[in-house]
Image (cartoon, rainbow, N blue to C red; front, side, top):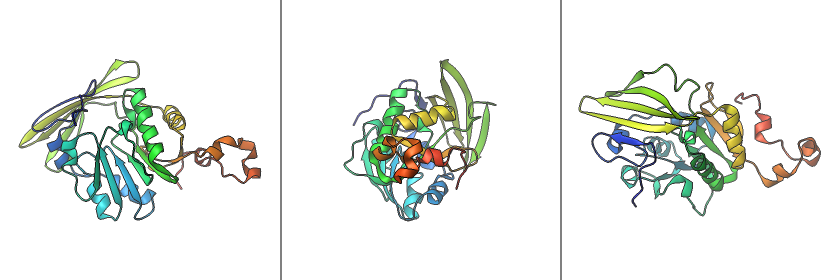
Length: 259
């Protein structure tokens, strides 16, 4: 399957480059972060997970090792060639149509901050379309200061990641440039990002039929959302208790505190 490069996204360096500017060989060598720990704390053991935008399987592998059954989705066949231990599906996330529901849908890597609102709606609708009514969606958001105090860098195993710049290119959209430097290779990636306030993020969830259950981390970068059922939507707030319907998760966790 041939996928055109996404507008405003590009990458340089050895090996294949995906439509959003990711270098396959780079993502194969990058170490995993705290994503598996966040997932493991937030969902039942052994859950069926739909991982959207899995890349080379950096997060997939530890999830499988921890007993989760993972279906890994990516639009890059070169990325999926690196995934081990999981069923793989090659498709753009916003176009995904699987005839099944999952206990957990995972949308990591700040994909919710895509610059195109139509794509963001497609991503979140794919989450809602594939999550079980009693399941949840785990979403990774940008930190509040992600586009500030640049350049900055951090060390990773064997190399260095340097966020060089984040420049406004149109209202609400920034172009971010990142360098990855290793002794034997160097890659760059440029991509577009749309920062979202908490209100804008929660409005986007609501449009897709999802609601915040809780913010999972102190910096509010990880969120557990749940599907809003038709019954919940139909019952006015003041009548929920009398009708025996639980309040929507966004109301239960309106103060943003984890439980």
